[in-house]
Image 1: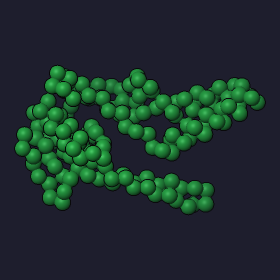
Image 2 (image 1 turned 180 degrees about the horizontal axis):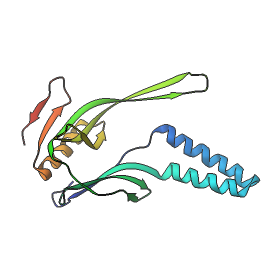
Image 3 (image 1 turned 60 degrees about the vertical axis):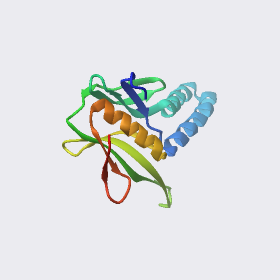
Length: 166
């Protein structure tokens, strides 16, 4: 993110289950086209939606606004809101846990350790800006955001949190 760029767009990755479901629906749509064309077309549209859908966030630093977006391909949809009163930019390490249950109540749980960069509001709410497994990338991004919004960076990746020098 260069100093002259004042808008940031981050599209979060879809869960693997949604990707698999999109592929399965696409395969069913091919079979549906052969038997009932209307059903096949509906399934093909559903598959396209599942594969093209992506949630994310867009932040305009110059106007101090943000929006949670729903993206279909390159186009994002969402309402712009002013940024609330902010305390800091926080960087912390967390585990993402997802469980998938089968018909027999068997479950598969996956854990992924990630580093999140958030804007912390005065009401102790978080606006997640970035999720990565690269600590260097997370801290470089947090420093850029802190400079654009004139905030401090809170490092909560270790056992003891600490403020980083600007």
